[in-house]
Length: 497
Image (cartoon, rainbow, N blue to C red):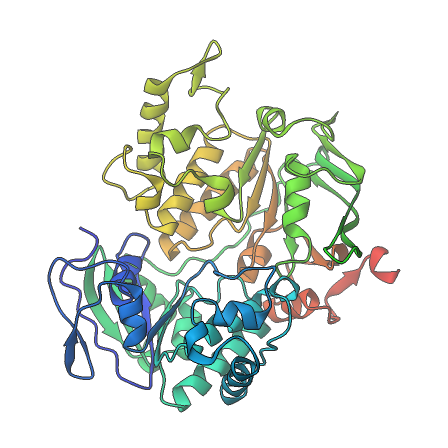
């Protein structure tokens, strides 16, 4: 049962945080509040009136809007077109709509420009567009699902300023997050749920992150601290001169990767910091063989794999935790045991003598579910039925189960609770001790600093600076990611061009 005896009271004009471990029922509760799912029993009351939501349209009509963790914007449309899409009857699609967008943007300090193409916006600006979309439709209560997952510290501060402005104007915000320090800094009240039941409420002024973590999962808040160095002098991955350009719809060529070069040794975690959209995704895809660069080479354990298909790169020892688990990590409508096979069809235990071995794959899926604490009623349910955090644990378990030489980990703990986060860090540390090389890309700067042996900054398709994980702060790293200089950074030769 996803939700059982959940009680939550949200005062108007406040920021109310909702916390809980993966599978606790947060997503189900929010789907019910937004009309995407109907409860079997219980009531929802708004301003003293009991309501029933059969569709999201019902919720929107009563002033409830939701900003999902995975943004729902069309890159090839302008901000205005995205905002009015599906709501054309409100203010049309022209000057009146543009005026209303600007009014809302100015009233809440969102800084949204209606005529800019969404594909030209950074992550933080896209999020503000999503917030404006629900405000445009008349929302008075906003549900924000993991809104800081992909933001650097400065962007988080700006978002919290926006939330305080919304609150000052009388709007209500339900804030879902696993980042307990942020919850305590922005929320007026906190509700914690565990295994589908409300287990308590907390006042931020009298609660510590440690106490909140213990209330959520019964353990202290973990910290991603790297152990004694295990870096060897054996090069495992060598990337040399990767260059990639693409031509946009106007015929203008844009450089995506600009002569990227680096080496990762056995036992080393190389962290790459950068605001999303600065070439990290394309870099990973080039290393995985999912995208052909215009120039440059990729060498894995001494072998040139620059022109080798993705499947053979995986067979050669690359594990891959993708940044978008829905797009590149899972078949959402397939059962868990089939998802366990993805990317490893030709490897044991999934196949034997060139033939698929479903029985062995099912048995190993059961092991992964147990070893990685994937909360599921069984291995025959679809991946879509799992919470985001449990989907992530399934992927991590799958990739680590093949003892890779190199692990490409793009946001490996995004959307997981503090308990699962600590477990994933432990898996990476343990494999690192055994000689695993890791390319780590993350929006969690504490994670990057804590796990990395070597740290580099990526900006506009270039590696522009090196940072010492032992001395740099998240704030300094965040500044570097946005193009600002820092005293704890060593700028590379590429940055001097």
